[in-house]
Length: 555
Image 1 (spheres, rainbow, N blue to C red):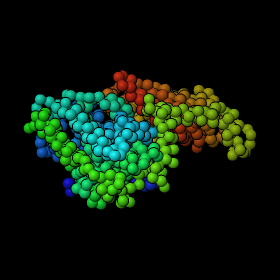
Image 2: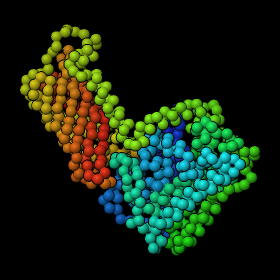
Image 3: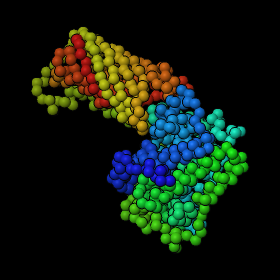
Image 4: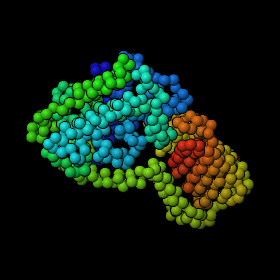
């Protein structure tokens, strides 16, 4: 496994993530053990071990090989919230890693901390991470939790076998629907090869089984199973609930011998399970027997270890670098305190977002609109806002009253639902304070998880601008409304290029600076744009909260 271990070098994201966690101190974190790409730290531990297993088995057995990519398959691969290596740009590899990540995410995005709190705190899901449920008390709690974890892995592996064809190899036509949050498309149900999804879910539990357990020096036998849920809720008692979840054990890039061995064993066990399922020379019964043999090798319980003897003097309990659960408040074994308060805060926010991911964003957008409109509902409010600062004479300087035609150019971007926007068009001044026109923009979408830029959409819309006169002639405020159409310029899952839908936009409060007669610099710090380029089947909308800078010229 030296070749595999050589891949696990800390990068800038891991270092930055570790610094962030240190700064957060008692902030709650997920119980997902080895991290996944796109999370808080973002080191692709699960992905790397899974890629290693798939590459190895494909090379050895010539099984599970890629199927030809369709246009929709390519749209899925290009929009994944993680990067696939160049040699694994295929639907099977994508489905396998989506399955691995599903234990942690359950359809949510990797940064949706409020939703993930509910997932990782669910007692029914602890078995998917080889962790104790609340009822797994001592004596016998570790053995029961391990049996529960083994049962989950075996269940998923047998379900994976149902995705094989008569030849014993993957049948790509046997699919299942899974909810996934993609980089640009967002949350959507995707049809994926059954075998790879179920294998991925099993491999996640296998890999977590090496960071969530106390093990023998060779890393093969389990001496104790860790406890996340009682620990984070502040009620864990070691003699009853077992040892706590340790964030230090989640570090797949650590250089010490024990954690490097754990990572190597996790990759090794993942490879052996994939091999057992994909070996075309084995019958279904032989594959089931091989799966059981792998579980016996890596997930057998070693009796005689417990609270009284420190789980056979487990080094994980006494070595400081392995300890320090980030889900716990500083200065107390039980936790409670700031961590529990953080969980409650996330729960309150998450409760509003469980039924619809966009609710929080919509609320934020509505708040921005309300605040901006309250700040400048009309001319009198705008004048009140700047009068103390501007001073000068009290005579209102007129906005240009003459009929005129103006050209517009602008550029900006959005961070939430990352995107860029470049626009241009023409405006006509109808009367004092009112302009009407037509504009168009290219709106490329950015997959913020991978940094890849897609063609996005082309938006064409009518524009209405209401100007609010300030006392200082060179500076005015404005509200801008847009309505038109959005044309999808890229293939997305369930939304091929060329689809057409509505577009609406609003900039509640912008600032225009008159540099010279007929020439303005315009800044819109709160431009809300909502292109909906696909209204067929699964609707695709890509709301953006932009900052836009532009010019207006002519007269």
